[in-house]
Image (spheres, rainbow, N blue to C red):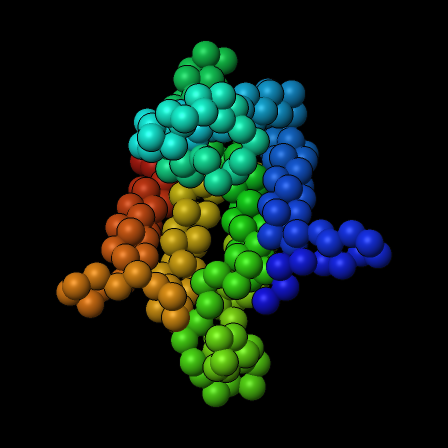
Length: 248
């Protein structure tokens, strides 16, 4: 794919650069749109900052707990800036727990905070998809379509670029939903609609991937994970969209 961007004497790593830029853009956008959900920019910005820090610490601690032998010879490597020594699931769990505590600490309804953070998640998803395309991950199955890309000696679906393009559409959906008046936008509906659309996109992308992990029964692991999330998100979204008795 395109892992390096030559810029004069510099060789910039595109995947890492994409993640850094998308993180900064996601933070800025979440702060800017926070007032649409009735929250101040300072509260959203502070929560995101400390949440990201908690996630970073949690990702490293989870990695240490899972692979303690990697640090026995050099315990100080726990503080290494190497991103390969982070556990993504542990980081997400730590950040999620912190944000729940932070919302309770500042008496912010959790559903409203989730809505306010949705632009952050949407931008990061698009950035991660583009980063995957640059790394050559999430490559597709062979195809004869005219827009196929050549990878590993075969013309293949550019599934990571599909994911990136569809993620931009999801971001546009989030933007349109955030512009609706609160009277027709129950708290939590933006977040759950984002989760539903994103899970649906991933189900589609997973079906075209050529590097999926396939279980013994023939099911793709990505589908096993994404389909229950899609069902849960649609259920929650439907509950929130139902008219309340006072609205009928």
